[in-house]
Image 1: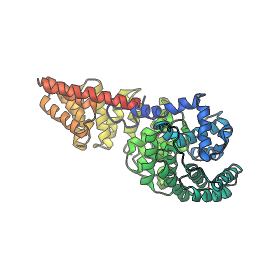
Image 2 (image 1 turned 180 degrees about the vertical axis):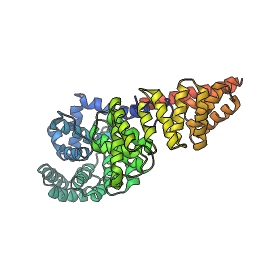
Image 3 (image 1 turned 60 degrees about the vertical axis):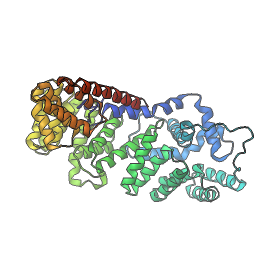
Image 4 (image 1 turned 120 degrees about the horizontal axis):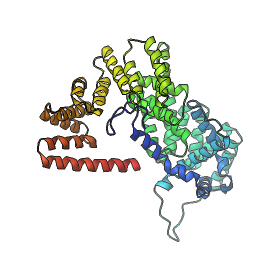
Length: 471
């Protein structure tokens, strides 16, 4: 469940929806299950055997020492490690990250078996194999400069060598040489475009080189391909996605990602800061935040993180103190209402209405009030707030849908209500709930054929949505 269940199942939720949580969790399920299976062990050996052509099956995990340090580097800066986590487990997680990276194309689209007698590609040259072995040895001996020199020589002989580009990129990342790491991961992905972890590391390098638009696009691609089985990298990717969403003005998506991390037991000052930046609608990354604004950002972020973790008593105490310190600051009463809406809807309504005293055109507060009255079937009370929502934001589809529903259900103006719901459908035709509301409005007006068509569309969209979530 979302920490702040504000809207219905098909409507946007300010702090992330059940659907977001479900999709993020489901993406990782298959690799996680596979990693726990004994059947993964021979696959580990085959993957590592395929890297350099040498017999390394018995030493599959030792090849991940650098990646383990990289995982610790990117995760340690953001997420506080869980108590009792051993180095062995981190090594295993790093191993599965490499498996996901170099095995993704095999697991996603298995290559057909070669016919007997089909000639294989040319074998690797002895010079390449010797350089690859020396590079591996230098890397594992903790000599990154020598390893890089050897990897470059080996890559000159075999430019499509994915493992070489991967370890070159991670060595550069470890050394804070992000531009060089970025270039290495670009080479890697030109040869292996389905490697989710490669896109993740490319995006993280681009974040550090301040190529923010590219970073967001590539972190999004990593997330779409799936980062299951190695939660540290996934969580760091989500953290940076949240920062970049805020920078782009997509504050609700940013808050949803931070809330998701909190519900998974993660907590750190960096996550608190990211939540505060998004909640207060500041289109900046942390390094750009003015020092004079840091206190309120951290205060609000802490309260909302506690709310996400369902520590409602703590969040309530914190918001009471925040409102004493900043009594006239916009957005704060609305955020307090979000924390309270599940536990105490009446007090949440008070906070939403208090927000309107400070910010009369606060669309989210207006919508939240209308939504709460709609949940209580008090459509007459919902009407004025739903209408004001549409007046403030004419392109907000859920506002049109809610106003239309209130008009139809209250009987005050069914035809106008139908028109508003039709507008909601035009703004968001893929939303199944809009089609359901439209079918009900048509039925009230006696338009049975139209009502049947919209009911069928509602059923089809719900089916498609369920199938997408299961994937």
